[in-house]
Image (cartoon, rainbow, N blue to C red; front, side):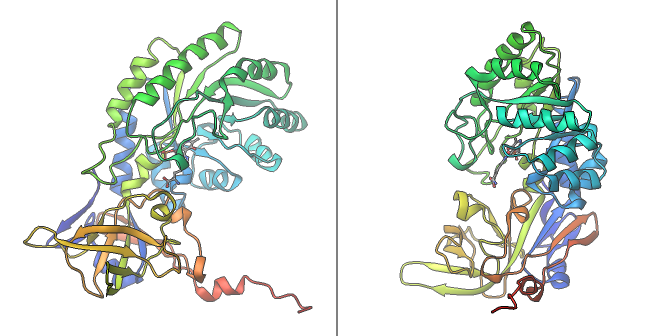
Length: 421
Ligand code: LLP
C-alpha cells in the first residue's frame, strides 16, 4: 500500500497535491512519501517479529540522505556496496554495527573504511577478496568479521539482468568451493567467520526459488557448524518483488516471506539478516513528468514526455513496467486511448511504455510514472546533457526538495579543455 492517491480529483502524495509540487519545482521531478517508506519498513520488520533479525535496507535502491534518515530513524540497518554508500549510511545515522558490506570488487580503500567504522560483516565473494581483506585487517591490527556469499545455483525466475543465484552469475562462491573457503578463513589471521550470506536475485515474484535456496543453505550451515565454524548470522539478501503492474504481478507478501523463513530456518539458532531494497522504496516514489507533445504517427500515437530514459532507466534497461497515471483523475468512461510513452532522448529504447491503454492526454498534461522510488533516481545519468532532476520528499502536508535540479551549466563546467588544445 502506498500514499499516492487521488483526492478531489488530483493525485496527491500524502496530503500534498503533486500539481503544487510541479508548480514549485518544475518537471520532471521525483517525489517520495515518508509515510509509505515507514509503512513498508514496519510491515517488513513485523513479518520477522519474534525472530532474532536485522533488517539492512539495500542502500543502492535509493540512497538519498533524507530517505536513509527516515529508515535509520525507523531502526533499519544498511546493506552497502561501495565506500560512497558506506559514507551515506553512516552520515544518515545508521549504526556501523547494523551495516553489512556486499559486492564482488571491494577495494582496499573500501575495506579500510569499513573496518575502521566497525561494520557488522563483510559479505565476501571470492578467495582473492578474502586474502586481501585479511591483509588489510592485519595491517590495521584488526580481525574483520566475514560471511561468505554462497551461490546456491538456483534459478530465481526473474529478469536475467537482475538474477544472481545461478552458477553462471558472477556473484557468490560456488557451492562446492564453500567448505574450502571457510577452512581458508579459519587459517587466515585477519578474518573471522561470523555467518553465511546469499542473494539470488531481485524482483522475485515467486517464493519457490527462495525455498529451494533456503533448504540448501540450512544444510550448509549445519555442515559448516559441524566443521567447527561459528555461524551466527544468516544473511538471506533482498529480492522480494513489488507489484509494478498490479493486474499482472502478485508478489508474495512480506508475511508469506516471513512465514517461509520461519518454516525453513526453524531450529537454526542464528540471527537472520535481511536486505530489502525495492520492497521498502519502490512504491514510495513517483516520477512526475509533463506531456510535451502528442505525435500521431502512421502506425502509432506517441506521448512525448519531458522525462527520458536517462531519468528513469528501468524500462529501457529491463523492459520494466511502470504504471503511468495522469495527475488529474480521469472521470467517466473506461480507458480506450492507446499510446506509446516516450522521452526526448535520441534512442528508440527511450520508451517508457508501448501500446499502453489509458485516457486521452493533451500537451501540457502532467503524469506520474509510479513505483519509481527504487533503482530510479539512483540510476539516472546526464545522457544527452540532460540535467539530473530534483527529488522531493513529502510527509503529511509538508514537502521539501531533498536534492535540487542540477544546472546544465554546472554539468558543462565540469569538462576541462586542455590548455594545449
Ligand atoms: N542484497 C544484495 C546483495 C543485492 O545485490 C541487492 C540488489 C539487494 C540486496 C536488494 O534487492 P531488492 O530487495 O531491492 O530486490 N537495478 C535493478 C535492480 C538491481 C538489484 C541489485 N541488487 C532494477 O531496477 O530492477
